[in-house]
Amino acid sequence: MDILSLKTPNYLPLFFIMFFILYLIAYFILFRTWTWKLRPEASSCIISLAHGTPAVFLASYAIVSDPTRNFDSLNTSFQNLVLEYSIAYFLMDLLHYLVFYPRDILFIGHHLCTLFVFMTCRYMVYHGAYAILVLLILAELTSLCQNVWTLASARKLDVKFAAKVYDLLSPPFYALYSVVRGFMGPYFVYRMVVFYLSGVANNVIPKWVWISWISVVVMAISVSILWISNLWIELYSERMIKVEKKIR
Image (tube, rainbow, N blue to C red; front, top):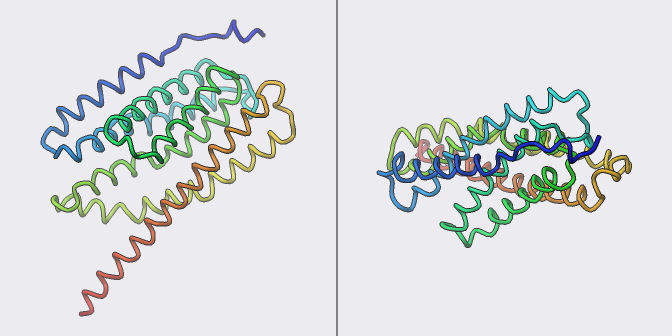
């Protein structure tokens, strides 16, 4: 079947406008009483919440509803829609970083690389959405916990409830994040590498494309593991300090 005949409406502009409006609502209304320093990060958390958990359910349905799903299968219309939903979010969050944190090269680079993967899958090769959406699910499984944790962390010094939420949520969030990024993610990437190295997908997904995908994902997972490792160390140090204070 001709790929051109499978073209579906592009909802990317609509999704981007939705995230943009949500960001403005969060920044100027929802967090209007927060300091100017905290409002951008909090607004970013809100659009992340609007993307993360819904993306998990949407991507899961997009995968399950495709009976021919495989690492090189043709994208379905719904899979393309989910990709557009995520592309819109990352474009909006990239704009957020460029405006408020232009020196945060790590996150800007992360978003650019992620956009490269999503956009080549959606608009260039038209195949491989199954693999990309599984990775999206793994990446966003911890989104709800992470964003609540981030918001609590931002106010833990001046709001007692936020401090309690932060302390209560940290261990389970770190544990879930560690399992997903430290074990489930690497295992799925291993399966991708084995499949693509076989050469089966080379006629629909050029070698340089899937190598780029793998490289981006490996870098993202590596940074994630380093990040969560540092958080575990900080948590351990904080708990040890509390124990020492009690003993004294």
